[in-house]
Length: 64
Image 1 (spheres, rainbow, N blue to C red):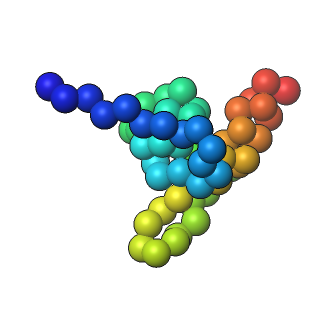
Image 2 (image 1 turned 30 degrees about the vertical axis):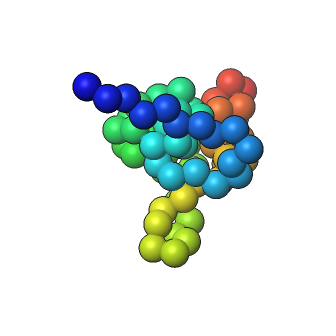
């Protein structure tokens, strides 16, 4: 089995797999729960991308 290493360093916009890595959850969990935490994708060139600041804000808000 081959594993890919995803780097999210320096990326302000991330595909779902990268966004999940940044949020420290699986891709399936991210897809299932993102909207619940107020994280919505942006359509760009036919791809769904997520803003890193939205993910960070959701993580920080969950601690309050």
